[in-house]
Length: 273
Length: 273
Image 1 (cartoon, rainbow over the protein chains, first blue to last red):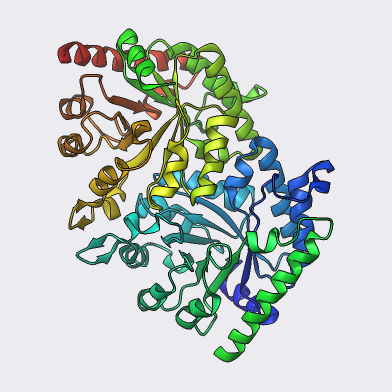
Image 2 (image 1 turned 180 degrees about the vertical axis):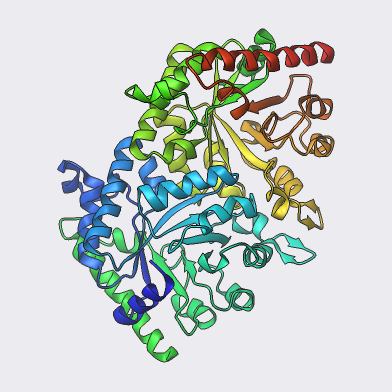
C-alpha cells in the first residue's frame, strides 16, 4: 500500500486509529480457548467488529513468537484474513528487526513477501545498511524507532551529542538514506512535549504513536504538535481496546472503545481542516 | 548453561570458535534440496562434522524466518538436535530482539523456553526495561549489541556524547542493569583497534565477535587486545565455514576450515597461559 491510499482511508473513515493485536492467551475471554486457534479467533472477531473505525492493525510479533510455530500459524492466518477481507487496511508487523545488510533483506522478505505486511518496525542501532534493505521494497513502509514510550526509552535515545539528542540524529540521518520516502517513525505518546521538536526535523513523515491509553499518553496533546495537513499520525491503542471486555461480548466492548477514540479523532481532524 | 561450563568447554576443546548457521537454500549443495528438510539436513551434517572444533553455534534467525513456518520448523529441529546430541555446546539465537518490558519477556520466553537456546542477541536502543527481561532468566545469557561490524555500524554507535561514543555508553550503562552478570556483548572484528578501549570498560565479560573471515577481520589482532584470563572471546565464522564446500563433501570442507581456525586458536590460547 502506498501513502496516498493510507491518507484516503484516513479521510474516508475519519480516523487515524491503529489497533495493536498483542494477544495474550492468559487475557483473552476463556470461551475462546476451546476453539482450534484461539489467537486467530480472537483477532478475527476484533477485526470484524472494528475495521470501520481503524485504518491500521499492528500485531506485535513477540506475542506470536512466544507461542512458537503455533503462534506463527496464528499470525499468518491473521494477516491473510486482513489482506483478503479488508485490503484497504494498512498492516504493521511490529517486529523491531534490524541486522547487517544481507540479513536485513531476509527479514524484509519474511514480513513483506512471505507474510505480505504493508510495513514493519525496525531498530536503528546498526545504521544505514541495516535499514536500507527494508526501504528498497516498493509500496512497503519501514517504520524506524526514533523515540519510544517505555521507561528506559531515554537511556540512550536521549543522550546528548554535538548535533542534538540521539533520537534527533536518528531522524536526521534516516532522511539521507536511499528511499527515505518509504519511512515512518515511531514516536511515543508519553512524551508529547517532544512532538514540536520532532516536526521541525520531519515535518511531513507519518509518525506511529504508541502509548495512548494504557501507557498514559494524551491524544489531544499529541495532535496539537504532531498533526500535518495529511494527518501524519497513526495512533496505536492495544490493551485499551482489545481487552476492553473479557466475556462473550468482548468484540462489542472493543468496538465501543474504538468508536470512542474514532469520535475524538473525527473532531480533531475536522478542527484541523 | 552458565559461564563456567562455557569456559571449561573452551579449555577442553582448545577452541573459542562459534559457527554461524546462516542457511541460504540458494547456496547449499544442490543434492540436499531433495531431502525433506534441506535446512536441517545441512545443519545436522555441519554440526556432526564440526562439534569437536566449535564451542558454540549461532543460527541467525532472519535466515529461518525468511522461509516462514517451514523455516521455524527447521530452526526448532536444529536447536533440538544440538541440545539432545551435544548438550555441552553453547547455543546462540542471533535474533537482535528488543521491545518494551512485557513484550521483551515474550521474546525471552520464545528463545529461552520454547526453543531452549542458551543465549540471544539483543538490541540496546530501547534501554533498560527492554533488556532486563532477558537478563532475568537464570543460566541464560543476553548478548547485547555494542559495536557491530557492518558498514553503517558507526552511523550511530560512533556518535560522540559528553561521556564518550554511544557504544561506550551502551557498555557502561548495561553494567548497571539488574543481573548484568548474565551479559555478553557483540563487538565486530573489523574494528580491532577498538578492543583495547572496550576492555577498559568490560575487562571480564565475554565478547561475541563476528566479522572474522568473510567480513575481513583478523583473529590475531582481535585476540591481542580482547583475550582475558578466561579467554573472554567467542569468534564467529559463518560463510567461511559453512560454504567452504559446495558438493557432497561440504561437511568435510567445513570441518577442514573449522580445524584451521581451531588450530590458530589453540596456539593463541597456549601463548596466553
